[in-house]
View 1: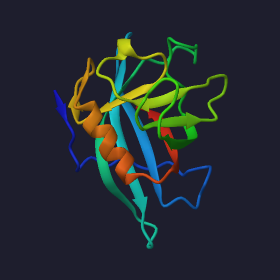
View 2: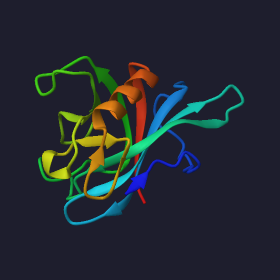
View 3: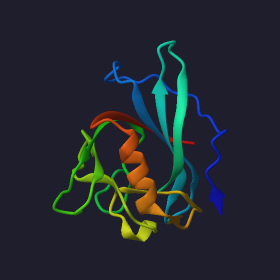
View 4: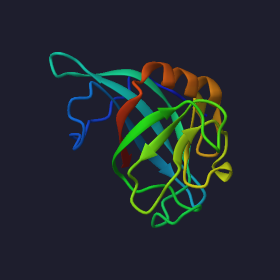
Length: 158
């Protein structure tokens, strides 16, 4: 089982959009099988001295990349805008909507435990492995409490 290690730091690739945001997210997917991808979800703050400071880290789980096909693939690596939604037709709780994904709609970060529960979205947890994440609701609530309503996400496959 992987427990979040706050000493891990990933080099930030320069954000292409919303350069003025002081808080941003990186999702770094480092482990892959034919059924899921697993990695780290980091929240960063760019300080007044232009230093990137890690302010939160948890684990993330998604489907593997399958050419961005609806319902069976995660989205491609890249830079995305995101916003916190109070609720939607899919989820009756606060969650994150990843916007401007080419040829995809409704990509969210929400509560869950297994990749088989996903149709292209992501789930986060306080701990987990390539097969599942734990304490997803707690992780999502903590993430939402730290993020502004609108922010950037960078998805990276490692």
